[in-house]
Image (cartoon, rainbow, N blue to C red; front, side, top):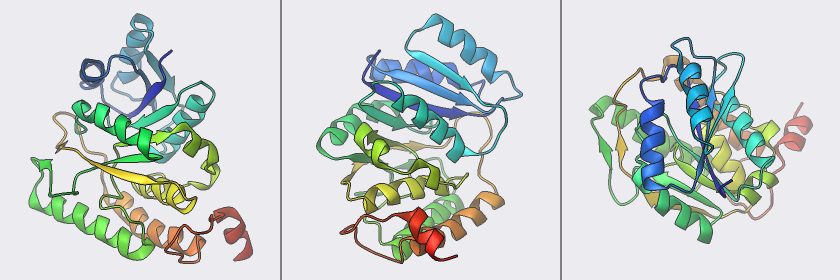
Length: 253
């Protein structure tokens, strides 16, 4: 077993899973991959089962239903913490996250607690996005920073590396967003616990096959969850004291 685990959630990614696994291993051969599939109807699970049987570095978890990105990652984190991995990486299945950036993320995670693959630090590094999508994403990042105070240029990034000690210290039960706002919740809780976050420049590519999971419901959830995050921590804008979201929420009832 390797010391790094890359968690890749999937839903209807039959065209991509073999490609992303090959690209990951070409960049970082000494790593394991855990695919977390939400019972994809397109046969993704069958492909992943075969891949796992052929390569001991590949692991496969099939969940009973599709209930969002957040719960899939939480299931993956719990699985990882039962094993002796030292670092856990979040990564998309659609080849939008460049596997060539994996060594840089891991290097940053050895000097900091969390490494964030940033699309916007030192410029904009996005390929083939329409202007409307870029404005939405950049605006969301600014919105998150203004409301929560988190000192991260790209807080909505889905390409991140966490040290094991960070996940062990976090209250995973409290991270309850199901869509992309889960990514903000995760970083914010780590920051409020006093962990150091570092940003690593990455190139982000528009997915090359399959359909985007972004929809209006996910956007609505993200708008509300950001305020929920800030409220639970009483709008603190500094991690000088650890935030305990469950106790704050209980006290506000």
